[in-house]
Length: 381
Image 1 (cartoon, rainbow, N blue to C red):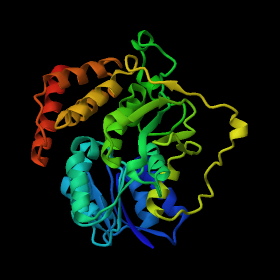
Image 2 (cartoon, one colour; image 1 turned 180 degrees about the horizontal axis):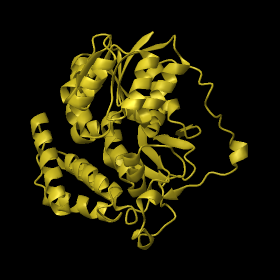
Image 3 (cartoon, rainbow, N blue to C red; image 1 turned 90 degrees about the vertical axis):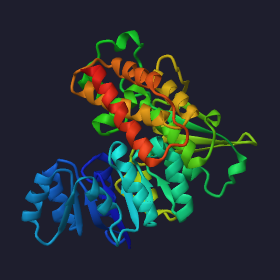
Image 4 (cartoon, one colour; image 1 turned 120 degrees about the vertical axis):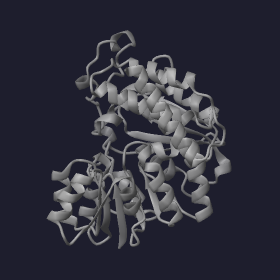
């Protein structure tokens, strides 16, 4: 039985991870979780799984739950995230929190030699060089949970890195894939949250609509698979059946296919190097689907993807700025403070204003992250 900690247990990836644990109670045990502000769901998780440690965001919620569950240990805040990540019994940490808050707990868990099932893109986007170096130094595996990176990871099993010609990440195109830029001018938050294929959290769904989600995945793929950006392509694939592909230098292409279901890559990360049955999954029926469609990516239409490639190639603190500016801008759009296309405008201004720092330390990354958020917020104000 593998001992599991989940950061972000009440979010989309977190709850689907719990589905896996529920389906395989003899294979996995939940020992620690972190939650945000959804106390009602947290109570249900605590009652069902009885974790030993629960970290909450706010001190007030910490006191509330502590009084309700005297047999369980509680902690809170950023220190609480770290405590949940490095719980002594934990073997696999599922990092499913949103944003750059996932970085320090991941680094601490690596130092504690936990296996990392990484669903928190921002950890690798903002500090990929630090994370991969720490993983290498501590002999720790980073197992991808994103469907695209899990697909690539599955495709390269038994293959040699030197034989890889390029990675091909597929993209659904998000909520507005059929619309021109001119038609995006007045789109609403409700429209943006209506993803055609996947059920995800609000922030990721907006990122999918802008294509920033794919941009962050390109940067993440660069670090996970040790390939230059010139060898990482993005292909528009509306059905989300092929989750990604790997082309080898003999012209062979290996793809991983399946119905859009995040539980499949989550379970693969938890069960790796084995596979477990997933009886609740919908089986892929290609005859029923009939056709799959593909298009080249239009970088002028999806400017955020272009920003991500440029920031990734420049390296240093540029991806940190990209991510921080995007988080603030997306939050502003969800609160209906800005229009949809202004998300890109704010990101572009933040990237243009930043003075690049090469090979930044953790403290430098954290400072740049903070400064970028303040700068974008000043533009909003």
